[in-house]
Image 1 (cartoon, rainbow, N blue to C red):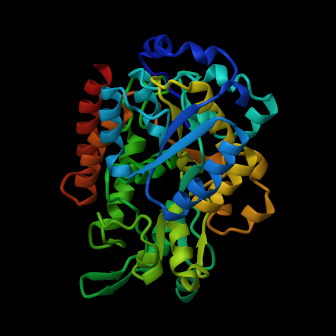
Image 2 (image 1 turned 90 degrees about the vertical axis):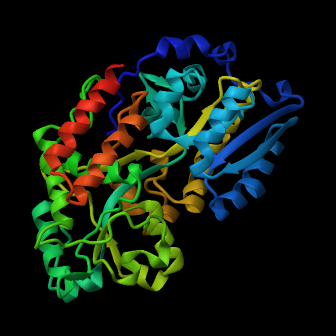
Image 3 (image 1 turned 90 degrees about the horizontal axis):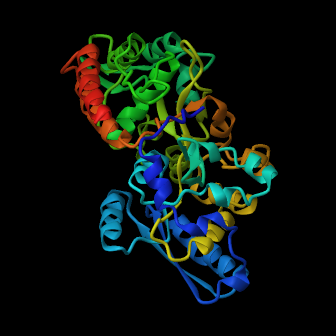
Length: 429
């Protein structure tokens, strides 16, 4: 599963850890007139309603004397808002973010080391929190994942049947063959893509490449996180495969850079502009919500296997405690409450994603949800980003070159070797 690579500067983060972390979380009687501020990323209406009308009232009722103020911050503004808050000493007690940011926040001493808090949990509870290890940097806990996510191949069963394709693709050769049959052209223009990837920003670019990279038994960085390896022969071969989908006389895809994540009824799968597409669980959820009659014709394949069966995924967004929090014990109580088995189930029902607890894998309610079960079943095959402080910078640097290659402006080898050299310099700083 997700690589947990060594992160530089752990000593700095540990030194900044507040002394409160060495004691168990306070009981409600110890928390008189405690005020918590919590930031959640995003603007999903159903999540906002659930947090404000269910989570906060229930938590405040269970923790007498604690009040919680919640703010939802758009993902695009989150990093800027947090940077300003850190600089001004006004950071929220608890804030949500993507798992990829954990190493950077830990290295900068912005968030608490949660090891002592995790140690207060029942060992059986820790084992049940199947994504917990994904939130570790250099072996220490900094973020508690709220859910998992992943990228899988979704396909229109009606279109595959029309093309005489009996089974979903299982490897690259199957995918290429199926895409060839499913692609529709008018002259030299593709009017229906055989298969598409989501690649409209640096994150999605790197994730799409990551799936192919992992399937070809490659990786972004070395095991110890000190060397860039995204220019390996396996990596070049993986990018070459993706580039071939969009370029040349045998291209089977169009629409690069189209913002299709979470597009619901306008997603190319829903409109028929694509017969197959690599999607995340949240995007599939929006299709089910906005185009249920089409969603009934969409199935999801297990992760593809080239050299090994894998796909990009793992822990998604989670919760940190700010190193500046004046109420870290109450902040941990809030995280523990929101990640309980009951709330973990409610969270994926409201927001979508992979349940953060193993005990929910066979939950009858969740197993009946078609945009949850395939991704939950694939959890053992998901790999994610390296947990190193510079990862988001490395990802953005890599993605610029990935985009050039996908558009045919440079060769896969040029894109990866050039970006790897620059990435290695950044990683060595």
